Image (tube, rainbow, N blue to C red; front, side, top):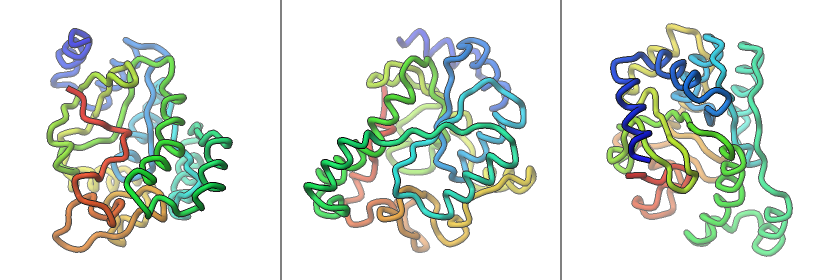
Length: 235
């Protein structure tokens, strides 16, 4: 699969994010999807897709534990662009069994429990969302965390058997904010209150000055475990 990754790298080199997305949608017709969690970066990419009418399916993982502010920007985005955002929910049987057995807050008790919760609420729905597709677009940027410095803007995802493309991988946070302001893009107001990375409400807090970008995610755990498994580093 390295040949596919190399092919995409060569053909997107020097293209703008919108040009690269359009090229991918043409190469993989009906098989390119974008996952949004309605953060700064994802709103930038949603705008690129929707404003340019690119044939890329936009979806989100509805974990059932999102912030009210996240639901607001989700609804506002659909109103503004008049485009669908497809929601993928957890399988109710697995979710009910976990909550009935361990309670609604078992993720605080151990890393294993937290990964179980992420697996049910995020990983399994993601697999369904990606099934049958060839390219997964994400809002990952290199500077977001140390783990992501080892990633590349084009990767092969072995677990999901598709290519991942990160169109704004090399952008700085200031570039993201400027793009949002210049294009009047709706964004999650939690960002203004110290939340650079926003996930489920029980698992996300604001960060303090000088803290890592993802310090507010699963803050009760060791820093080295701050990924849920959605974006395992692919080589």
